[in-house]
Image (cartoon, rainbow, N blue to C red; front, top):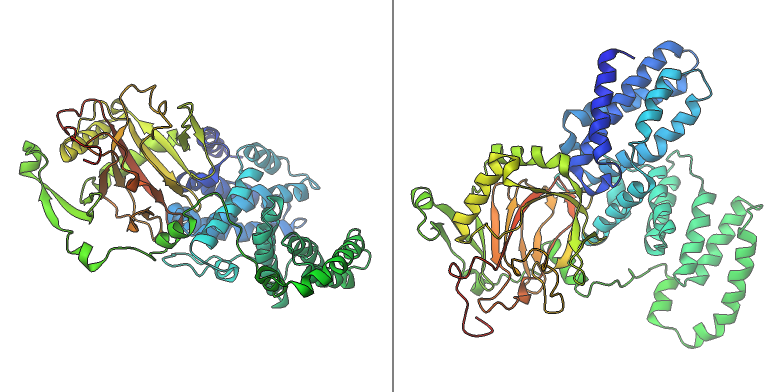
Length: 535
């Protein structure tokens, strides 16, 4: 290995070591994997030059990876904007490269093995691969995409072509199965069969697929189909260790329930017999409304309401800086009043903030309403960092700009939070303010409740990624350099429950945002209290 390559490896280890695991929660951090994978390909090429005659199979793999990484490294964020590319990157590094290591160990390849073995400690984990698979399924559900569409990579706004092979689809189905998600197991295993029937070559066999699929449909209550699929499995593999026992069990259950099902068909049973399965109901009551808004459906921006929305130049409270250069302000919603400001941050400021935030990115957290302690949650998939004014002059400049625009003081506001969303990155419906049963949420800060939210969009998003308000039927789409602002509290200090909002999953793209949460303390004369509870 050349000295300059050793130095490069050390540099990459430093970067990856800070962000080990949970790569799927940030596209920004996944770009580091592109370069790590490219380095692995280069190391592999050197090894091939030494033992090319013996390692033709490995050389074929390396050529394939070299072509892939040359394209991805040229534009990492653009390449990873396609969620299939992002999933396959995680899957390759967690599953395929370790398998290759086993093959190489059969030969004398000390240098390459040393390189790969060292880098493996910084590879994505099983948790990452599962998280990446769940992200694709989240996109599948939210945007009503069937597995065939995702497998073919037919997504809007994509720059790169990406497809899922039979083995990739099998990996998706197996991930769902291991999580007890039999609904998605069925969808993806059926896609595997479809691609196998079309003649696609794969290491996955139909017997393997039918093994998972038959048990998954059984778990969904479809005994008829479970029996049918198990019989197909036995016809392919008569000596299968579980299939025989499963078939006898399924047939016994079917016989016991036959009379009951014949005399009392329910819609669910009839649907199950036709191989149609309902998506399980989950914990989020407004799931359907939320996901419809994410797709741009059900937006309640009626002509009457639209007539109440205007554009204007905004000079704050006649702040001198804004009198000279006012901001363009556009109404996004009338009540509660949500506005968008244009040209809030320049491209140079955005890139600088991303640059200083990236090394600090960590899995985004939510504040536990009971304890006030920050903790990770499955309904928030992103990484974030908190920037202080001492970190860089641009942070202080942006903070001051937000103060001028809003007329609120930043002295009691939280630090500037920068967030980068990962594969299918989202933040499900939530309130920014603490409610009456969450009195301790911001107690440690000593600055009262979150009175207002200022959200900067630091990137365009090719598809998905809207900010939606389910109770309002409002959807706001990211536009780089713009910002949206709303008050979370009424003038009385009561929470405005209409401001419950969500960040929709990113379908295609790399979403960066930054936000400032203003708190009550210090705003007493800048935003005086109202006299009634609904002011």
